[in-house]
Length: 477
Image (cartoon, rainbow, N blue to C red; front, side, top):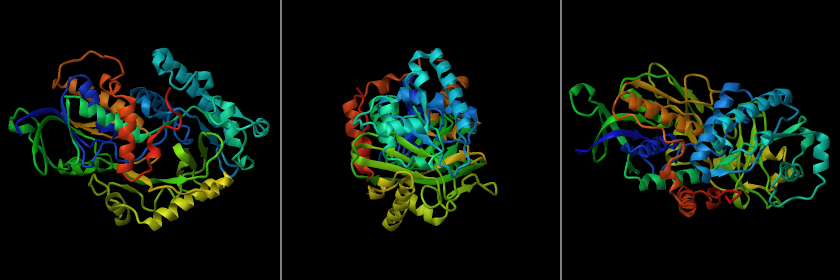
C-alpha cells in the first residue's frame, strides 16, 4: 500500500475510537485496526464514575479526576448516559464509616462547582447541591410507607422505591443517594462506529488483526512505522498502541519493557420478576477479594439486571490478576482464563457464577432470590499500569518520539488520553498547530438517536446479549 497515514491506531476499544475521532475532528487522517467485528467490544463498563463513589479506598485525587473525565466523556457521548442515581450503603459487617464517605462527597460537591464555574456545560449531574442526599433510618422508615412511583423524579421517590426492597436493618446508617449515572457500552460503541464510518479522516479496519509492527525510523523513509496485517502493510508516521490488556505484546516486539498488571473480571446478566417502579443502581460496600466483597446491582430495561460481586467466586477470579515479570512486558493468564477470552464460557460455569451473584444480592434484597440467568456474562481483561491494583485512573505514555501507548483503566480516561496524544503529535510537527475548538465533536453530534438505537441493538444481539441491554432505562427527552 502506497498511502502514508499520519496515525496508525491498533485497537478500537474506547481509547482507540475516541483517539481516532479526536484526530478526525481536526482533519488528521488515521487508520484504525480492530480484530473484532465491531468497535468497543472489550472489557465492559456500566457505570459513569463521576466521583468514584464505588471505590471507598481510592484517593481524593483519583475521585476528582474520575469526576472530571466522566463529565467530559458524558458530554461527548450523551446518548450513552443513563440518568438514574446510585444507592450507596455500607453493611454492618464492613469497616467503612459514613463520616469518611461524607467528607469525600462534600469535597466532590465543591469540585463539581469548580468544574461548572470553568464551563457551565459541565453541569450534567444536576445542581451541585443535589449531587448527593443522605437518609437516616428514621427517614427510611417514613419513605418505606409511601406509595411506589413507577417513574421516580426526585431523590425521595427513588429512595421510596428502593427501600421497600432492601433489608436495610443490615446496613449502617445513614445511606446515600448520589448522582453517579449509568453508562451504556453498546450505545457508546454504536455512536462511535457510526461516526468513524462517516468521517473521511479515519480508515476503520474491523475483522483485521495486526500481525507485526516494524520500526523503520532509521531507514530514511518518509514514514516511521510499518503495520502488517494478513493482507497488507500499512505505512504510518505515528503509532498508537490502544490494545488494552494486550498492549505488552507489541511492546515486546519493539523491545520495550514496561511494568504492568492485567486483570480478568466478569459481570453477570440476570432476569428478575417485574417490580412496580424503577430503582437506582444499588451498591453494598465490602472489602474487595474477601467473601464479603462489594455487591453491585445495575438495572437495565425489561427487568434485566447486571451483577458485580467483588469476590473470587463471582466477578474476580483465582489468578485473575497477573503481573509482568522477568523483563517480559506482557503478563500471561492461565489457560482457563485464556479460554474464556478466546473461545467463550462453559454454560455450567455461567450458571454457577450467575447464581452465586444472585445469592450475593439476595442477602440485601430478599426478593431477588427469584432472579435467574438472563444471558452470558459481560467480561474482559483490563490493563493496570505499574503495580498498584487499586489504581482506577490511567492515561498515556510515550516510549519514543512517535509512539504512544494508551494505559486507561476506566473508560472515562479515553478523551484525556486522546487529547494528550493530539498534543504530542503537534509538538513533534507531524501536524500543524490547531486551534482548540472546544470539547465537543461535530462528527459525533451528527449521528442521530435513531441510528444509535438501531446499531446498539444490533451490537448487543451480535455479541449474544439481550437487546434490552442496548437501551437506556430512562429515555432521553
